[in-house]
Image (cartoon, rainbow, N blue to C red):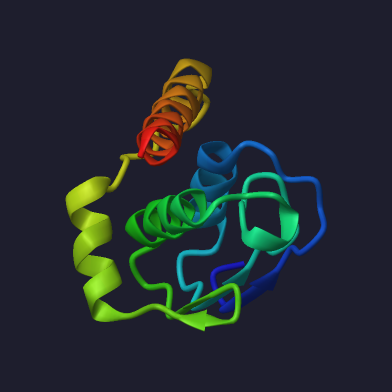
Length: 122
């Protein structure tokens, strides 16, 4: 499946972003276009997510799939790539490591909650 460059998984009840992204990165190394709209793991204004959650989601996905050019119908800009690298470092995949996937999920959720709490307090 290394020849796949476009993947559209809109409305698929994807809820664990780190696990999903790890699988995508492993199975589709040449992915350029990814659309995950209307999934719990892809927060946006349209599905109840805040702007902060959406930006964090984009940064996480961009940081983990470096060759991505378009995410959810929006071009990945170089300044987003730079910020994504600063916020998240590329997670090294280790096949079959359930603990690793759980740790990634907790890290992403905690980071997202911290950002949401910061916005809520202002």
